[in-house]
Length: 381
Picture 1: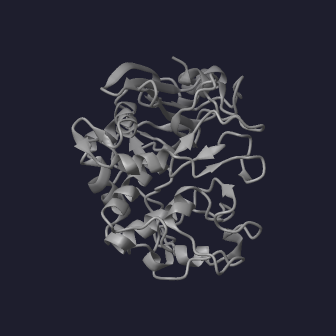
Picture 2: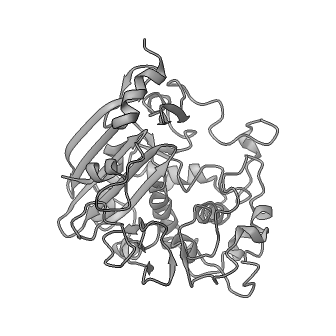
């Protein structure tokens, strides 16, 4: 067998190592396409059923579970989350302004990613968040948008404290099992057959994540500071980053399309209702839209955001969020991590959507958006 670096060298120069694209409508899958290798070292081809670490699309799925808890009365979008966490959760520069679940889910909490949000198993999130460097000292909560991964470990901690359940198991109970999805956050609740189909992530021809050789990983989370991996050390809300609520969902494109159909159909799919239409509408209604002065948009890839949900094609200078390039508003989320690019987008007006990912994506900017040429290509019909 050829060495891994040789297998990937040509793909890295011109095209991704693996791509999968699935289209769907309100009733089911309408097309599938899969090319390349899920695991180059094993020469294993990628398929539409290959589960992959889907990166930030995980935020949308985490939000679905959070909204289920809101509907059940266990959480409130506008309650000070200090009441759930059991300690005062404040931006030190604005100590009198409460931070709510709504602000966390819409990236308006005033948290930053200046400090590492991926904590070891024994990490103390409260201690990290007490550091003023974790916060934006210039903008009060609710007044400024800044896309920040750290918001979602806090959301996970709130969910754990409200239920007493470990985040990955909570996601399994609230979303994965009801929809009969072979999916999981950070592998622990996935079965062996699902893990065996997992996609290895690459960047520049080098493995970056999930090189599990078809086996259950020795430690599904970031090990403790002493190198151990005893998950019984978990305590509700102490470390919301443990199971990567911001990026750690492993799911195939066929199954991600079911999430898209759920959202497009007002919270119900294949006879299973997870959310009320009102909750879905709230997720998909902009909580923030860039007006030129009210947030950080980087290169313009995000210019309108609901609750755990992106909205595209914002007609504003500096906005490059139209990956489709046709000016039509779509709802969903993108993902970007460890050399992977991903997207879940749907248009409720036409009742159609697309789920895709690519690994080892060449860093070539697209022609009509802030996204890469690979993403623009995968978004096309």
